Amino acid sequence: MEFFLQGLDYQIWSIVEEGDLLVTNEKDKWTEDDKKKISLNYKAKSILCCALRKKEFNRISACKSAMEMWEKLRITYEGTDKVKETRIDILVTQYERFQMQPNETITQMYSRFTNITNGLAGLGKTYQMGDMVRKILRSLPASWTPKVTAIEEANDLKIMSVENLIGSLMAHKINMERLGESSSRKKHSNTLKAEEDESEEESYSQESMNSNEDKEAMLSRRLQRILAKKKKYQSGRRYFKKGKDFKRSEVKDTKKNEPICYECKKPGHIKAECPNLKKVEFRNKDSSRKSRRFKKKAMAAAWDSNSDSDSESRSSNEEEEANLAFMANIKDKILTIWKKLLMNYTVNIKKYVNH
Image 1 (spheres, rainbow, N blue to C red):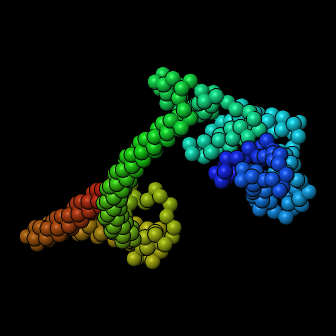
Image 2 (tube, helix red, strand yellow):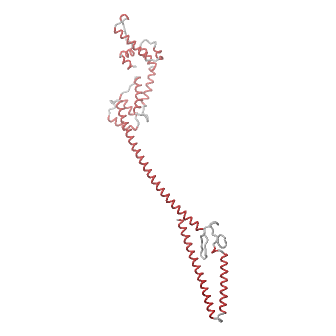
Image 3 (cartoon, one colour):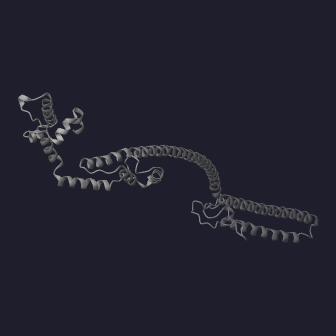
């Protein structure tokens, strides 16, 4: 309002602040200067009335001068001297506790600071420029300490203006943001590179895992084939003991895995171990022994009567006995060889499966 009134006419503000211009002459004797003074008095009142709302106009409608109107408005909105002092104390406390907020920009901080200082100036409390510069520097966070030290060493704070200080702080803030963006870009590039390396490692590990899986699958297939062959072989497997012809397994298998004799059709042994077959062989051997004894006695009795016939019969008997002994010897050798081969094959199968 002060600037507005001074812009219209400087004397209008003096009328509002000091009172109406005095006119000593009577109305019939007014000169041009007197008319101009009276016009300025009414002009000041008119401007104030036009700037107010109806509620405020009702408060000043009974006032006769612009000075009286302005004083009533001042008391209404600024209060008395006690109210003014109270407001000054509140603003001074805000000024002393002023600090820059964590997520606040330099512009926002300076706007809050000017609101406090302008409020104090409007109430008649002013600070020197150097004091305000130091206050702003003290209000900055700890991350600004290097910049604050540089400003204090490079400038005289008594003659430095707040505007120059704010400009320097804004320039430093822009540089910090630029450096932060460059570092974030580098970090992002490093992150991307690390992710690429991780992806390459994952692909390599995936390939190695696939190769390992292929090897494991191949080994499992081989093992399945070996187990299948072993299962086929277990149906006809033979076990042997020392001093005996055959050996039973030390592992207690179920009846399904036990061999079945082809002679008596009973499980638990094979044909070579069948007791029925052994009984028959024993009988045959016994009968052959008896026949041999009988033949020897007959040959001894008939030796004298017919030497030629005896020699022929003896030779034939000797040939038969030699053939029988030869066949028995061959049979024993074949069985022994077969036992050894079967045992070696069983041992090799067990070693290969365990490996």
